[in-house]
Length: 274
Image (cartoon, rainbow, N blue to C red; front, side, top):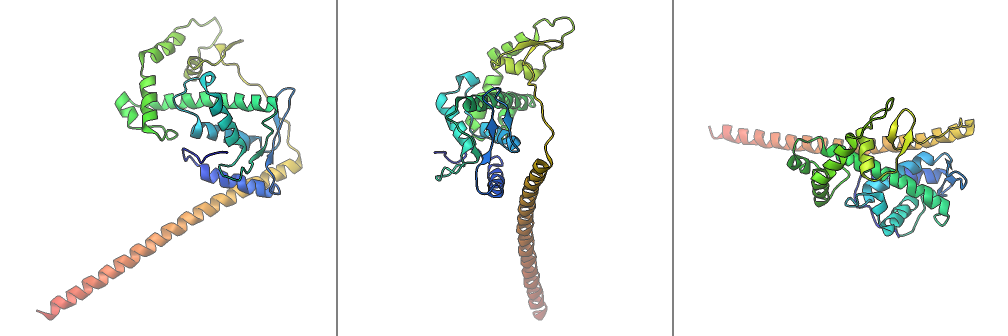
């Protein structure tokens, strides 16, 4: 069973969008196919699944776990459930994913680990925006709602051990014709990502290669329909916000009018006594 979200980062809106897509899919979970041979994902909802994985990491991954290989199995299983199910008692499915199949779990966990490293790198970049640790602690990243967790990260990022690891990788000699690692790649190495040599790029994370076939006309029509659903939802949300603002304006106008009437009555009362 999946508990409600700990961090609220567009979670409600995204849940409504998935609900609309499931409704457009005849009330069935969004189908995703993961091939056992190469782990390739196919289907028109792959992008939605990828977004959900990133959201799950930002909202629910433990902040104080530094490397993915240190992630407790219970936490990984919980995140897998959060990807598959809505956070409610009915165990309503978002995606038609069979988590009992080993290759499905393996691919999803690989995506979770990649997103986890990217997220940690984003947290470090945010920390570096501020000139002092004290100021950084006053400005936590939007995905870290617990101040104690953010303080922990700031202390970790500013520790001599962490900085020494970063400097050690920066000092590594660069082979002739190779390109120096970026800060993100260095950070990923500090977090323990496996690296490999790539011709022309030196040592660093191997790029992911993929091919994308041209979608058929029916697939394009379905994708356009889904985009229309999302656009309609966005319009409805903005309309609700406008209506709320208009109600507030009407209330303020009524208050001003009432105050003007009171001032006018007070002025007339003063004139009567002159």
